[in-house]
Amino acid sequence: MTRRRVPVDQPALFGDLRLPSRAARRQVDELRDAALDAVETAAERARRMFAADAGAFVVRYLTVHGPTAAEVLTRQCRAAGITPHDDRAFGPVYMRLARMKVIEKVGAVRRERGHGTSGGNVWKLVEVVELVEVGAR
Image (spheres, rainbow, N blue to C red):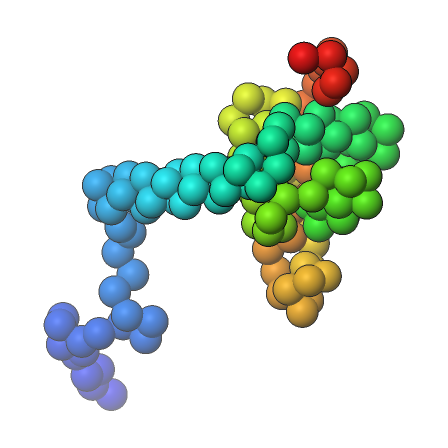
């Protein structure tokens, strides 16, 4: 039995599987950060202190309830009266807390509002942090 050689230039089943270059990843990160900044700016324009109030609420909620899906945190935050112009404004809140090493992703769940699609993050506190009263500023 002879084996047929596959031409080297034949496309792969799922296209080009090479990883993106470092420059391409950096560009994607810059675009993501610019989008997060724009959403956060709009949220602050619509509700002053939104990011600070939402961040403090998330930390308090996780302190009491433990690891929680982001959609639950968002819903509870809204129920507490901390409402942005658009729920996507919670993304920068979670990103900032994660970058500050206050919270971390510990799991994934199917999204309730995403029709059961994947991508729902579960967050938990990295460590207990001292809370500052939101109204004390």
